[in-house]
Image 1 (cartoon, rainbow, N blue to C red):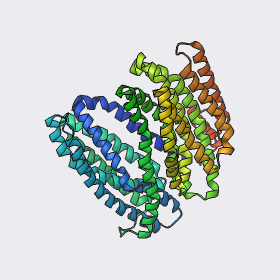
Image 2: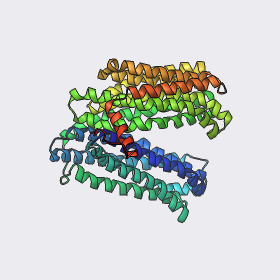
Image 3: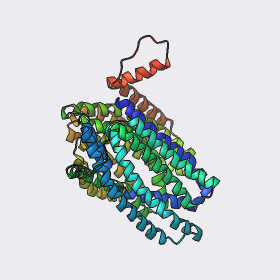
Image 4: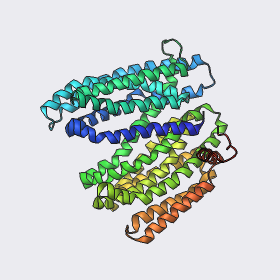
Length: 492
């Protein structure tokens, strides 16, 4: 299966539910009210936090299934049932933990109306059951991705995400806006998705009859998944520490000023996420001597696509923020957005190299890198915030985001072969960021320089694009121009 097609499936599978969720937020606020919507948000947050209890079983199974691409179906079936039994145990533990933890947390909330508190008590059992369903579904999802069935997996996951946005809203509108009914409706969608995903997995693996877990297989899964789980715990810690420090030093208003542009520009990671997800099982299934070429090609594709896109975002983010949140807040948020955009551009390459490291069976490398860099990041964040305030927080985050790809590419032996292209495009992005942050918004020269940098980035990107990307572009162009004779080369 083509990596380009799998990347497109992953991208569409993320963008469609995101669009639906954005569109339905105003409707939720109108139908269920601000208080109930806030409780729902907290409930989904608690559900997400308990994901670490599965010990990385989804990506661990994905890696093992991909390694067994040319192995026997019985081997793949054996490791699937082992992962499923392990996640059954984790799901039971997670269900109990969420039931007790949610009762404890919501009982401590004082500023909640008695009516909503009663609904929360009725909703917690439904919310707790969602933990187990989610953990069982992650096993099937891991198996589908390991078999590179990204189209089918994304159809189910995106459809269920859209259904989980629409069905509870319909229940609230046509029946009653009660929290227990909303979460129960969401649970129905999760169960349906898990069932469909499992049926697809039966054919894709294919699965044999259920049997007891293999302890040897369990050890393999837990060793890999344990490192993935630690990374899952550390990543949100690193991602939230800047906001916690901003809140304690500068107040809640400063957190909003930082979070709004950060969350907005973080959507640029959808493309590298889609690509890294598509190549993860490929790194696991191919021989080590072919991984260099795959990683280099993926980084070059990311470079060609992300550099002009990031430069275009740097040009447009200022006007967009002023329209979206007003002139005053937009002007204050713009420099933060510019700096964070540069960080996400750099982080895009880390995601590719991380897929190789983890897909190649060394998830411990990523975890150890996080453990080493976090103390330095916290110290840098403290120093830069003390000197530059909220701008310092953005600089510290982007600096850490830029270190990850350098270390991982060096570990994989790709930094030296790619340094010229990386350095050239990094200069373009850094110059554009500097112009956006330092030059006055009203100055015509600012916009001229940004436009020139964008044009240079587009030309440089196309001239240095790998042949397979040019072939895909030629194929797409040929479809739009039927009169063109000849056919472009077939991309596998």
